[in-house]
Amino acid sequence: MKLVMFCDYGLDDAAATVDVMTHWREDGYNQIDIVPVGGNVPTEIALRNAKKLIANLCMPLPCIRIVDTTDYPQPSEFLQTIHGMDGMGDLFPDRACNVPVLKFCDWLKELESGFVLFSSGPMTMVPYALEKHPCRFIFMGGNIAETPNYHGYEFNHGINPKAFAECVRCPHVAITMDTCRNELLNIQHREIPAGNLLHMIACRDKELSFVRKENGCYTWDDIAVKYMRHPEWFSLYEAYDRDCNLLTVAKYMRCETYVEILDK
Image 1: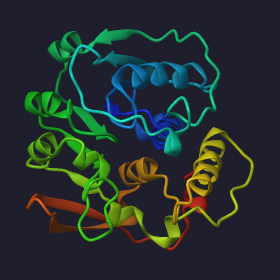
Image 2 (image 1 turned 60 degrees about the horizontal axis):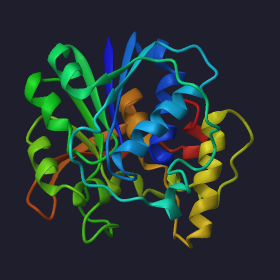
Image 3 (image 1 turned 45 degrees about the vertical axis):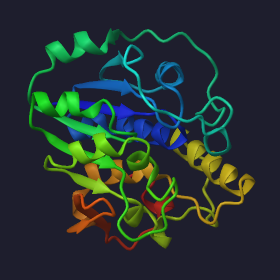
Image 4 (image 1 turned 120 degrees about the vertical axis):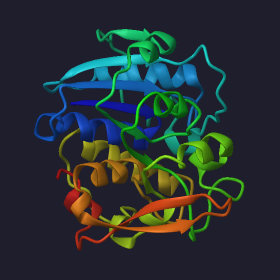
């Protein structure tokens, strides 16, 4: 099975990717295509961070390809107070990345049905894939009732509302701010034991949340991976957002903290 990941490589995107790469065998993926997009960081930095992250994964990996979207205009920010000076927590040294890199237009031409689509960033590039084939579509984004974090919206929605509205017309599951702002998933005042790379990313996420005096810390994008891997931990409901988009929203139902499910 093939997984396609659209990620705007900030710190929580790194956590989501490491989680996927840790469990790819048991989840049945034999190929993972990573599509870095603009959002938390500009597109060219997202591409650089994707290469850097993959080069630093010291674990068995499936067939991985990186898809270069830098030829396409994409809105973005550079949220260094949230994601560090390099946009990905300043955790990873520069190393040579030896996985294939394809141009987005070439990748799209060869894209075949039968993949799972995961999006942890703005939806700017996602419609191209959704228009080609129906698929299982999971994303982190959107907001129903929680206090928004970007000009009255959740960030991934607010940075490109038109693309977001287009994508959510397709069958989907949304990991919204409402999903993530669950006290069990708040790591800000929880001890994270020393451990693997995912633990290190969570610790850095928590550390930066104190620097910017954030009220709570949620590793947003990895919560979407937790749904993708364990849908039985969640219930689903439908609700309209402020733009009248109808979202299928996941609600976390398990009685364990994020620290307790970190490696599951």
